[in-house]
Length: 238
Length: 238
Image (tube, rainbow over the protein chains, first blue to last red):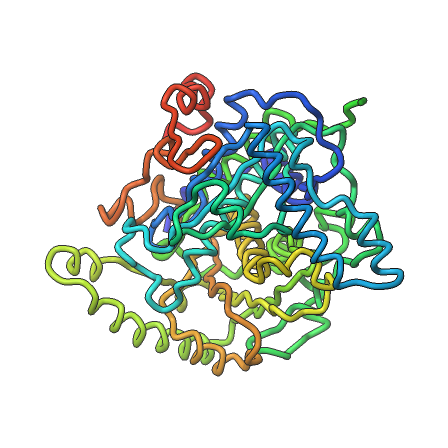
């Protein structure tokens, strides 16, 4: 078979890997500068080109700039976070309280990504065996937009501490749809070298070989895992 | 605030967008060539650098090359697809039967991505309000690896038509874990210009403006949507 693949240049390949390794969940570094419409457009179009089961495209995007709406979402977060914080005590509670977990009011644009599990597009192809694949498609759209945002020097923060039913009511989202993600978008002063939760000692990145199995669960293989990660060709030093 | 963002070069940016627009769900174009271990390693490391709620890293990866295991997975698909096909009649059934929906035996590597909703990493940060965020994290890992694969000229196909309980039993996946995705990976003869399901007339890409809402559900705004997509700056002609 003749190979007609249009290969990536070294610099194009570096661009893809830079987006993956330099993407951050931004909460503290948002600048007030407005997002130019075409930049937001490119980020949304990247999301829309995510894979979806049966080509179903189950997503919708609510672009939120209105100050009143954002204030209401922020109040929702504050209530939800009070309950969430109550789970922790002692030193871990101290770390938790020191973490900034959202930039709802700081970022110039908020974006709610929703998913319609009953969308007729795709005629149910591929989702009879696992209805959750529809939700995964919408999550892939979020990841596409997150990486495109990094390439555009735009930070994204995923706010997961929200009362989703109250959020749906606030935004008028129909009952059958689910909220996949509530995101804050804006230019940033910097992208931190490591995830916030790693920097603050909340959690560490796990060693990848411990998560690799070969031909069946629990079949770890140190030498095989080592062959996958020759230090010399590592893309990321991390 | 001093802006210390390391911006992407034009070519790096193009690399990220090329991966997003040229990524395909590959079923028919796999070559038999083995995947070099460092290429597979880079793809897996990209997945491991996906975002995860609370930095939970809920994923595991089962690399499958064994012919017997793959034959059993293929038999699982064949059974599941017989049931799935029964949903369609008439011309749509004819299209369905003409679609190749997997490359389990053609691709040199299969990869099962799983998710552990109870992993202790992350200490439950951010997932009290929506436990599904754990599943979304694993889906983001799949999207990262899919894009990295495109940059490496490697095709990926997501096989969603499988009896997942039988698959878990076959691979020995513990009861509490979920299968996020079963993927086929390999070099390809080409990446098709459009998704298979679009090429075969199964479904069309929806116009993105119809999926955009402003400050609340159902608040469409044609002129605002138009400002997001000035033709002159479009990254993709599609």
